Amino acid sequence: MTTGQTVAVFGAYGHTGRFVVAELRRRGFVPVLSGRDADKLEALAASHPRLDARRATVDDPASLDRALAGAAAVVNCAGPFATTAAPVVEAALRAGIPYVDVAAEIEANLDTLTQFAERARAADTVVIPAMAFFGGLGDLLVTAAMGDWTAADEVHVAYGLDSWHPTAGTRDAGTVSRQRRDGRRVRYSQGRLEYVTDAAPTLKWSFPEPMGTRAVIGEFTMADVVTVPSHLSVPEVVSYMTVEAAGDLAAAQTPAPTAVDARGRSAQTFLVDVVVRSGGEERRAVASGRDIYAVSAPLAVEAVHRVLTGRTKAVGALSAGAAFDAADFLRALSADISLELRP
Image 1 (cartoon, rainbow, N blue to C red):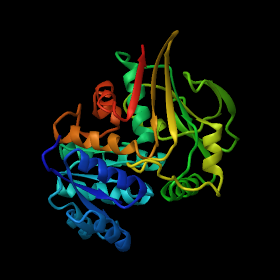
Image 2: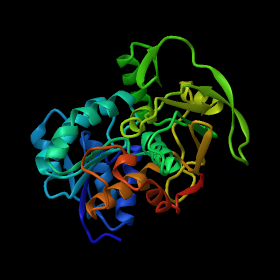
Image 3: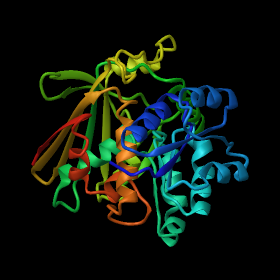
Image 4: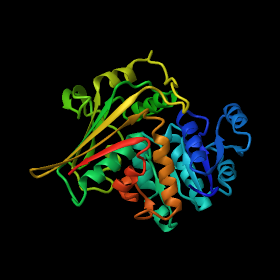
């Protein structure tokens, strides 16, 4: 447990933000509630009467400085991150504290890693984007599967979601990403991001039991194409999504997640199957759990805990796999994520 360190949460009243606030409290941190919407912030503060609430907006640097004053770290849960990441990172650098976010937006994560690499290193701090289910978990699994390999020929990340009820934030982020790509889709091949207009293929993927072989959308590209190549020498990174989940995400009528337990988690389950190939050898890592939004909270908070206790491998703008001992990090989340490494 941690002894009362203060952590600012920007976007604290959002779907994932609420999970992060709860996880911080469970781990002994003291969250500072922050965000742009005064009414939502007030409502959240009413349910946490002992916590400080500080309204801030990304177009008002002084308000962000007030929100982060006295905090040991900040977790940004407010999307679209194409809009929020840079201003909150700037505020974190002014405050001299580490920054973590839960962004799944490919281009926003790339911007964060490239734009703040030198400044974060010079400030002797860390800026860690995509510290969530998409981007962070995949990167940790790939890094753990690689083991002592320093390079690989290809990485495959297959997402076995039994359903996907997207939040409003997920839909907003998707809209921003489609606008940035002018309707094209993105993939990572031959060591670079490519933007293409053809349809993604439908394939079969043999997940471990009990999921088994499922139809998946191939080149269903997620933030792993940014996080993994940012620190590992892998020219091909491909991700896949079960057809059912992709259909849920695409359908405008799919409702937002509904809580079914005391922690506020939905009934959604996931299985992430990672395959790394080099020459004729193959290594695999498998993670399973429940609710992709809820599980982002222990991922982000474990990152904050490790940063504040000096358990990072480097400083600068880093992905999860570059910042932490991947296998040890994943094992620390055994209460929320079941892990199997198959060297």
